Structure formats: C-alpha cells, structure tokens
Length: 128
Image 1: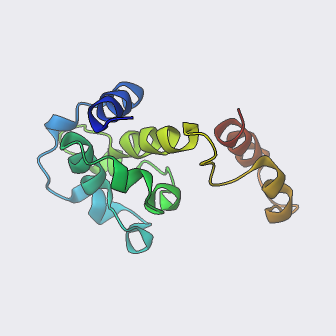
Image 2: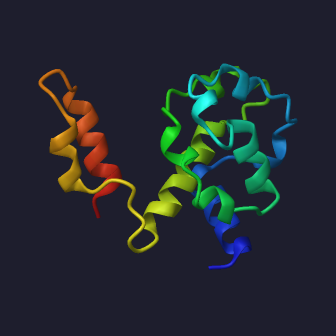
Image 3: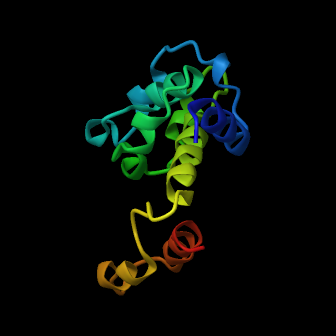
C-alpha cells in the first residue's frame, strides 16, 4: 500500500484533523509511557500529517501506548493523539500476519486479578 492511501486511511479511522496540531508537546509531556516510546504522541500526529507512515507501522511504540487518553485531555487544540496512535495500530494489525499478540498468547499472561474488560478488549483488538 502506498503512503498516501495509508495516511488517508489512518485519518479516516481516527477521525482526527492532524493539521490542527501546533506541536506544543503537551500531549507527550503528559504521556505516562513517554520513556518507553520510540515515537511520542505529538510525533505520531506530525508523522501522519507528513505521510511518514511506514516507520510508525514498524515501531514498537504502537504497543507501548496505554490508551489512557491523557494526551487527549492535555491537547489545547483537541487533536486527540491517542486516536491517531490507535488508528495506526489498527492499520498495522490489519496487515496480514502482523498481529503483535495472538489470541492463544493471552491465557499465559493473565492472572486471577486481570479485569475481564481487558480480556474482551484484547480479543476485540487482536482477533479477526
């Protein structure tokens, strides 16, 4: 797939106007996973706006995002970087054979205190 198509697909899935970002970095400053991420929330938005999709699709940062939406709360322009990250993640997962986590892997990583909502969310994300 070409980058222009991927860019349009990510913007469509996320519903975010990435051109509204003024690159203030408030979203990244509030991100609890900042130290773990190769690309930070404001970089995701900027890279999608510039059509630099391939590095994002191959980044482990997709799976480091906690989807806590702290970045959405802090954005003064209402850009919603977490939705962009989620859209890029969905795009990567939808590529044949690129699932980061398989349904069979989940039972090995849960314990008795794992919330059931987490399991349902994982199955929705990582199964077809």
